[in-house]
Image (tube, rainbow, N blue to C red):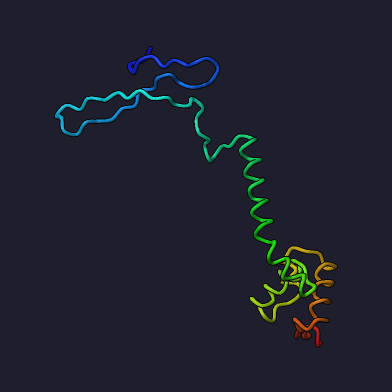
Length: 139
């Protein structure tokens, strides 16, 4: 038994029958703890730095649902123009960094040369981007 008194567990429910909570009275010279009895679940809340497998799975599922819902509307808009997500990403970064090389675009998007070639070919054919020879290409 501790100084705070006994803490009993009811059956296998994992619920403490009594748990003593302390509050300090500010109007007294000598502060005395006040005891409050309440029902408290004995399972400690998850530490955000250490999650259980089930909590990790739930987090992953929530991220999937958020990503799916977040991208749904833009996917519908892209379909109207016969474009996909790869086209959208390329257009975004070409617009943010005009005049960049294909090599720089490859390093940003982390895709293969074959993939970027297909995407750029589609964007060039539809007139969304234009391609110019670089200074090194003219020699």
